[in-house]
Length: 300
Image: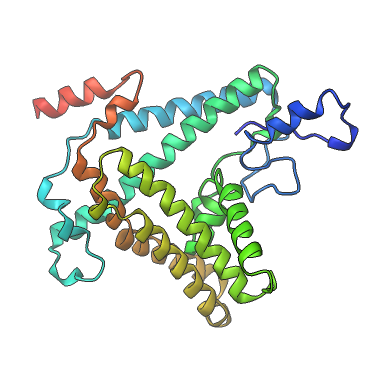
């Protein structure tokens, strides 16, 4: 979240420990050779302009979250276990499909704007306190128009806050358990991919446990492992698709493909959280438009 580009070879010994500790908070490794793929540069923004833009963006995102958590909870019948099915889709009604689409979109918007708010708050204070410069605080998300494959969604568009953590542990496990495998081999690369997604699933699984999701309904690991498998499948057919379709067509069809896949896979994870019924509004320290929305909904 917080970063400052530093040439460590030129640091005086007294400053090296502090900058080394800062790497722990530089989760996207910005300014290092391990920097993750990210969005447009902020190097041409002045400090004041950067702060004003981030404050405006954060306020807008906060209002979106306030609005979403003000919505009434869904009908319990729409989020029961059978409605999150991955394979018995023929048993779903039109109402279930419409809800599944809207719930999936709403779920990812909610998660995205929460991540945006937290990241922007850290960046704003870091720049104001001169801990970081604008060029060190790259946008947390890439363009969603670039998410025309599941791999690109996770590797280009979605936030990369935990990428170094996940890939680092995956490298550690594969390199130590299977040292005879070449890092460039297909088996090695896909084992690292699967382990990284499994660790992510395990982290989210534990987070859901803490929020009260029963173990037998917790679909976090299933969700993330499905995405690892689909990325492998995408890689397999990508050469054929690239040879047949131009990039412009692949982009359009790919965006629909990613949306369909997320609508199919997300309920296996997200519906359980909805069934628990935790009050999401309690996460917000201040309600700006929530009371007005609730009053309007009650009146209608």
